[in-house]
Image 1 (cartoon, one colour):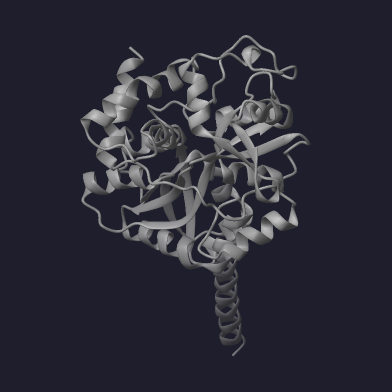
Image 2 (image 1 turned 180 degrees about the vertical axis):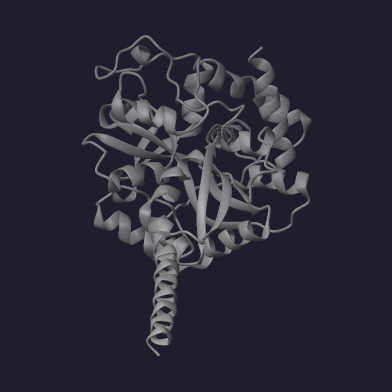
Length: 357
């Protein structure tokens, strides 16, 4: 009798221990499905955020995300080991879709291209007719007038009335490497539109007409980095001396503002025209497809994306973030143009690559 009771107690104890172990595994995060993604570098902080990770874990997923330049993701990285690719634009995603014959894609959030600069630079450019204050005190950056300065090889110390930044180097926006990075490709798209008299570039004649100026925009910079985090970190840490103008995603500036890393005098301008970079996820497996669906539809993930500066399907989310932190951004994007077709953009980028020699 005693032995029977002992066996029952032992069995009950064993079951109890098993339940504790299972519950412990769930709470500790084991037993989750690991999903690997190759992502644009500007989304690395989002995927590393503990709240984002918990939101995904509630759906049974653990994300392992490797960052790279978005054009690298589309052109040179072996994606066979990944469940999804998540570059920062639809042209890069289109290339992945075509090469892998995938029809599905998700665009859970987007970010317009912008110019991060400093108040003294804004005032200099305003005198030169490049910068103009608009609604809400937000500045626009006239790309055509800027290209005129570049085409003439104008230096900062040649701008009339420039006592704030009288340096002997050309007026140029700092970008990433167009051979690897999506933000540089988006910058090229903006410049190509402006250089083509306000028309999306299409056809060999138009490509040949804009190419010399486009190549100069990149070659005259010298060394450029592979991802947008590089020049933006220089902007934040080194300041106006090295990077008076840097092409960024609006989301980067908003994200760092939320974190309290944007200092007084740092200003965000919007190119006129600009393009909207649609962060587009291409699922490579069923688990990757699940990630795409969750990022697009899960309220918590969409809310968290807005906190990282991304514009989501619900504009109120982004509006609340910028209002809470008093960030000077454009409430409504008006002068937004389309990028060239995938084929045209690739030809322009390859031609710029050749000009590097």
